[in-house]
Length: 154
Image 1 (cartoon, helix red, strand yellow):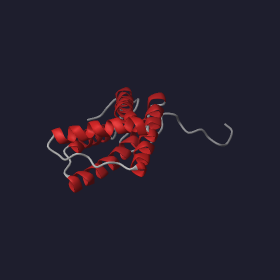
Image 2 (cartoon, rainbow, N blue to C red):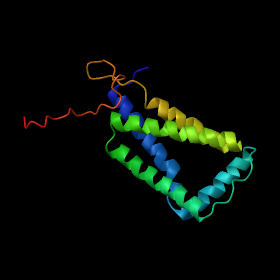
Image 3 (cartoon, rainbow, N blue to C red):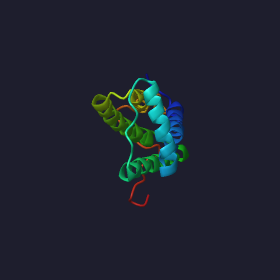
Image 4 (cartoon, rainbow, N blue to C red):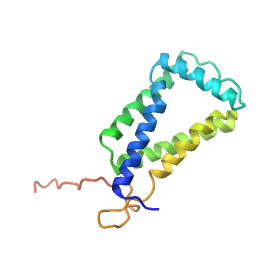
């Protein structure tokens, strides 16, 4: 499967909107407390245990992650590119790896609701992108939209 450049950029922007909606509750200690309670309840309703309580250091790292993902999401919305999509895909594969690790360690069914979409967004952002002439950009996944300018003053 190969995407047109405009379709690929739509995927990059859609993944950014998904991240904004999903990650916003992780950006502050107050919103995280509400999200944690809801996620714990959801995990219990899916057959898992209540999520463990978070101390101040756990909340700090959750909020740092939430904050940086919000900034990264806004960047992808404002300046969507194949390059940013590829980097986001790598990040999603890393996140998916750690979610799979946590799932194996805890068995928390809630993690499936995060793991599956995360991995799918990663795959979507690593699909080949058609160049303007119809050729595939799969061999040069990190090429930018703008050509490099010569430093020779030309």
